[in-house]
Image 1: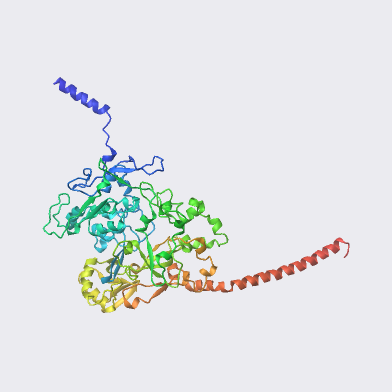
Image 2: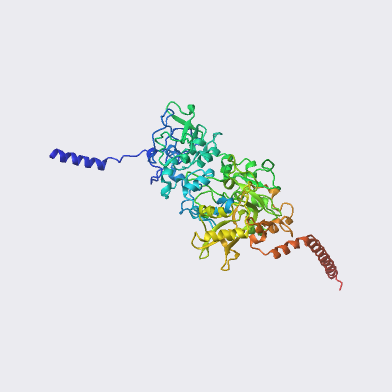
Length: 632
């Protein structure tokens, strides 16, 4: 009894005096609540790139870290970016970065940017979607998209994470989620320096719902096969069994034989200085139409031709809170370089060899800097008589094999539109006109689930030809009336159709009426690139670049885009997007016609006045001389 008491006392004493056991950071869960920085979270000061010769780990059936992958494993699993990289890099910290945090409602949304655009030409639909609370956008769930469905549609041009890692709340998707896995943050999409990094393959795997395999399939030493979308709900990817249908191939992965060393470690060619081409996959633009030059005939952004990289301006630390570079970003961003990464920030401090504004803008009236953003004169396409169509990677799947290359392919994005932003300055924008079927309750418009729209409107428009170009299917007033009446039977609230900046609905008399509504306004987002050099900036020739009676900057036509035939030839004047009076602007511009004469007349008058003053000055001098000489 005494021995047991003595042992107990000793054990208690040891518990107090001995230090608590530590947990190796490599084995901590990536989402653990800890302030401890991991090996790769903080630089040791060396500018050399660390050699990433590391073991690879898969995710196991419980969603945790699996056993180390070896080249001769009986069942090969795709490596998990999360569990492979988290030994040195805090995955939870990285996931808070701008490219991944859109689904976090606690994150400041920042200046509105390009939304995801849900397109369905067969029903006359193009809707701006965003998980961020940007004005005029809708949450994906409002159109019936679960995070899984959203990821399948748009994950192709993301670096993973975000919606791709949200757990489904739809019971019908639980087993599908287990089969396909989650779309983890794919660090290789940006940081893999190997030229074989294949983002097109990444997009293909996402379309097959091979989320778990996508990152591995995109790198240089692995390849994936099969399709999770073809697997039955009972399929277990961790214990694959033969299928009854030999035509269906289960998702699988294979690794290059020489990828593993003797310890089954693998070399990843990682770089801090991300190549521009990695950014271009998600951030490319292409002007289309008869008056648009081909890509080879267009000069690259002046900063890139000067030798800079995208990441020289758009920087971040381990939290991946990348600078976006717009004026005022420093007030909502914790990034230390936010203030000096805008146009004005660089060109007032001379960062990266930027020419100083005080030298470049000598002689320009200061009012221009109060009324215009830097990009108004220096960015994007030179304004023309009418806006043109442009394509973007995120909206048109640029860079992916098999896409529709027709200029008319939806969505129809127009630019440049010179509009006034929230700070009162005019800046260039891209824009598109929303078009969708919805309901209105208490003045608020909400899109109808797209699947419901397809089943209803699709039946009405079966006789109407769907252009192979991907352009709109023509809608008439009769189509809209029939569509609204059919949808009204399946929804609550008043059925409406949004298009061409108008809200269409059926009145009590059964007639189709149209009215303006905030939900029908075009969605605009500001542009910054490509930046033109000073010699090609707006106004370099004469003031009349903007201040003439037909200058496109003020009087250019902004086309209206719509599947409704009667609305297709409409347009708005640029001044309507700038909230300025068209006649006053015209009259002010008209004064520039006479300004050269006014200058000549003013100079002539000054000469005459000067002559008169000189004459009387001489006469006065003569009088003074006489007085001094003693004469009356």
